[in-house]
Image (cartoon, rainbow, N blue to C red; front, top):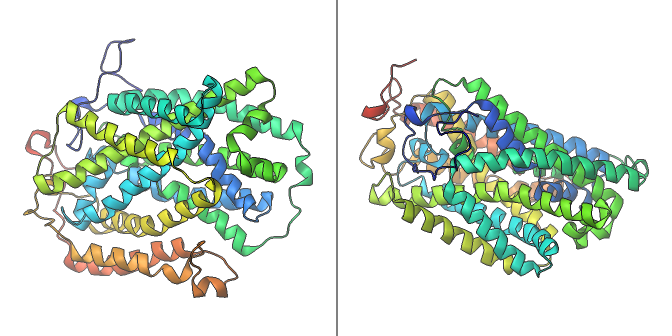
Length: 475
């Protein structure tokens, strides 16, 4: 990754927030997207996500296949969001004002903030347990220390986040590679693979878990590709993001599925402790706990940074500002992290079951948003956006876009009969034997409704319109 600061200098604190990144400040290559998303996925929560498929009934072999399908399908959608970053130079949720309106974009934003809080809290639980074992302190103290580390990296911003991502890539490959070998050398893996027949409900649950994991990155993935030079090919950004995210997550989830298959209730009761015991000697276990902390620090920083961006996008929709002071920026991040730490400390002991339901509920509310954003950007607007109008409620995109908001509500509601949740199972799901295909229905049905309606009501510019200081020839 290229840098515009002297080698060895400390990472500069990021100045940009929701404003367009000027060409003079663009840097890096799509390779930086690979290392960031690979490192962000090589971590303990992804291991837990993969384990869920087996814990809730799937055979390990079929779970691994299903998780791969889900990761690939969700990864395509996620990487298409990332490909918008270099051309627009904007945070992801600012660009969604082009579909929902300046005020209307706040509706999905509220849900995005809740998502960040949920993932930050669940990640802090696991990282806090690992830090507690490293420092020989209670898990609560570990959560507090981890929260402080998250604040430091998120406040410093983009450059340090990418640096941590590169470190997490190396650490993750070594740590999770070692654990994968340890599973095969410690247990008779062959005895627990292929012992159950194919079952559609559990297979589709695993597909949904993999897809949900990827799709929930959608609302903030362009936050990390927006600094790439404007001339960066969309295909290069797409493949760098896709490969990093899918390979990293599938590696971790495969490990999780195998661990769940060989461990029985031992992993369910204490995920971090079991991984430490699997590592073997105390010194090696300590290193594995460190691997857990580094991996979680990467993705938790993304959650805190993304949460800050979404909060700022929400507030500025109504006050019209495009930038804030570094002090205000730090306070947003500290406040968000403090809330996530509080939630982590109060987290339920029924971690695995609650986490599964949390992930699948997120899938329900984010698939319609992705369908609308991608359909509009690639098929309706055809990559032409009036960027100054994104900050002006009286501009081209207006305050509220009824078309997008109605389609979004439709996309959420239509999934209800197809849900397979702890608190509710839809009637169609029962007819399908318990298989949850709600996310597929939400993605397809929303796009099918939005496309013809938006073609009649949208008013995209004839070409990209940048702020005056950033105007460039159309390409």
